[in-house]
Image (tube, rainbow, N blue to C red; front, side):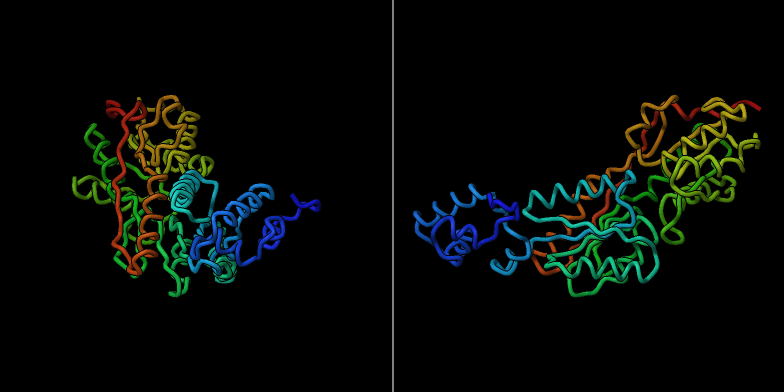
Length: 338
């Protein structure tokens, strides 16, 4: 290795192997044959120096761009992180490097800065995690000069930007139908922020209630965190007509359960709860949380596959959708007797 610990470059490899820089380039790319002797000397120098090709340099030499950018509002919440995991695993297996940029807010300046940052790279394509309004605005702001696909939770009308979906409309509908089938007169909904009107799990909830002729309570708006669920539940904890609640995610369900229990209402004996996402803690909670399982890692893989197909064919592929799965555990039961 270099004594000053700076990363070795092509010139270092060439000097160590005793060949020209162009010979090193040819040996590494394979586009122009070199003799077995030169190839062996170059590879020995690469191993000795610990040389790792720079993605931008590779793009210039090979003509193939191998960097994928991912733009997201958040990278640590469960759905975002698991989707990123799926993208990175699939991209790495296909020989791509992933760079991630966090969009700080929906402010146009923040969106522009994040886009400028990734567009300065030699990109093969871009993925937007479109789980929130910031993701929607980011997708709309990206230029048409690079292939762009989106990972999303709710289907939308077909656009020039392909989407991989988790159809949470169907998930919300299935969870609501399940609670109604237990005998609950209606189902209340504590919702996460929506990306657009008439979409997602909240719309599936409403559709199921209307189809069953059940009363449609006013949606209770919340954020994403358990404390938000706890605060939102204050509107219903003393209303004994509330016997079933669909929560926008599993974390909200934890906060709602705490608020109910503080007011002497038991889950599921007094109030049935169903969450959304099936986070790892859901089955370990007491009572084990009934929820809607979403394969976020699979979503990430499907999103990258759409982008790779576009890169390879030059044609935007069709959207890809998967239906979430209702997981029945212990937190929902028949309603209490009057």
